[in-house]
Length: 184
Image (cartoon, rainbow, N blue to C red; front, side, top):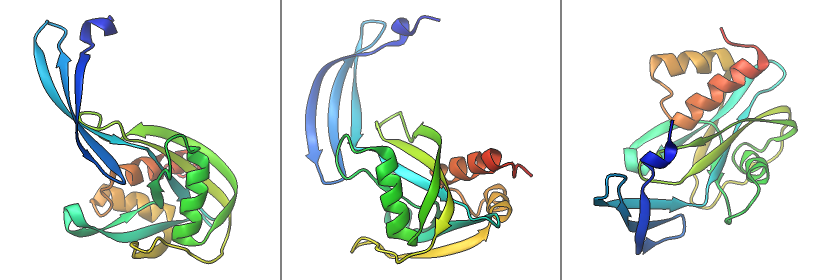
């Protein structure tokens, strides 16, 4: 396989929008065959997500309204990096505490995934958190969430029934179940 035969070369970048969470740019690329094309690219700092599982095999999920979809989703706790270069694990620990109130004794990196590589560079690191200790939640001022506790096996069933349809949550739950031996 020759990756170079597939590579596009960026010849220009134009900033369209520079926001708090993301940046939108229009790139001009030279295609492998010599032609040119435009790419609309969303640049993102990255994010971390956590699958918190207690000693009884329960997972703690968050439910929150997602404006672009106009619906409430059930998800694993997650959030963006506060700054470029922030350690993914530090962000994961912060998000778990903010959204659920939990801290964890042990952390296992499950995967790092590219969310939608056709138009964004967003990368999410997903961790399994075990040895949970409950504390107070500290959601962001613009964050309204409910925490839901359920057996990990039920969360896996919810993936198969379509009740859970968020990609990071699907990946995280399935990988966590595999890591702790609850593959059903």
